[in-house]
Length: 425
Ligand code: GDP
Image (cartoon, rainbow, N blue to C red; front, top):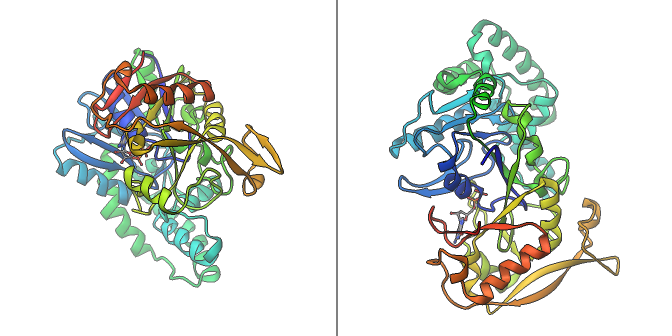
């Protein structure tokens, strides 16, 4: 396998972490190329259970080099806490197996404050942010108002740069939000306590990746969230503030010359969505509660109950197209085992007409789902490892989805553990 991206096809939380953890066996390098600590990739392996927020999910494999690319929102404080947690469970992290791009922008302490202050100001109209500072971070990055990780190696210049940024940001904090201003002492403490810890891992990862590519190394690009949260192609403004698509991987990883030949789109066997925004296939009441409990659908970062719904063919087809997915990993099929009849949203009803095209974000609020039911299989499938050993009805469910989304389903996962997987190749 050559270069490969593992991306989310839906609203996030599809199970990308477990797929990266599984597939890293065949790769030399894993790169996180966008997003920040606002999501959690759950990985369960011999070291325990982890919700990785920033660290690439290849971190558990010996010999794999893990990179945080220039496209990520690099939060030194949270990253260091996560590194300590992973190390305390017996995983070795060194500058040889973890490398941070010197061109990654730093999430500054006020970004989290601003995220929280703005959600409070919005009240009922809030976006449902995880309050990790991601939106303020990316807006500042594009305004050129944050600092690059590599600036930590230029302390005098960095202090002057931070003082300028602080003067500007204090205007917003105090005048717009009546919040407390920052002082240089606070920033110096942040530099000493958090930034110094991650400094040994910062390097020119672009040069490393270029050499890895020339040396024929296999590179895996790990995305966060899913197609429908992409800043440009998602359900704006209920998106995240970065590009979650495979097309962004070459830019955000630091290897603009990368050609990504395989795009594995991760799709859940039903739908979930954290936070606000239109979610056409949503279930409510007891039906939703039952599915939420069966799939343990509570946010990895926030613990918030996730909104749940039927598998959405309209949104998934769109997600596959946006990601240019070449194959699909269908996760959590085991969760549906309790259902007698499995609902699937096959089309949307919009302005009195049925459509299979994913609508413009403003129109989504008015769309309602057209639901069809497939037969359930009514038995535990978590021990199955070969497709032909799945109950006939479970095979039919997978085949139905595969045909409807027009992309081969090459992996079916039936449990959260690394080996709870059916490979169909
Ligand atoms: P990610 O952000 O895309 O990596 O997804 P999350 O980690 O937020 O959510 C996936 C959740 O589903 C995690 O709790 C996983 O342990 C769990 N999971 C992944 N695959 C399966 C599966 O096939 N079956 C079950 N029951 N759980 C799974």
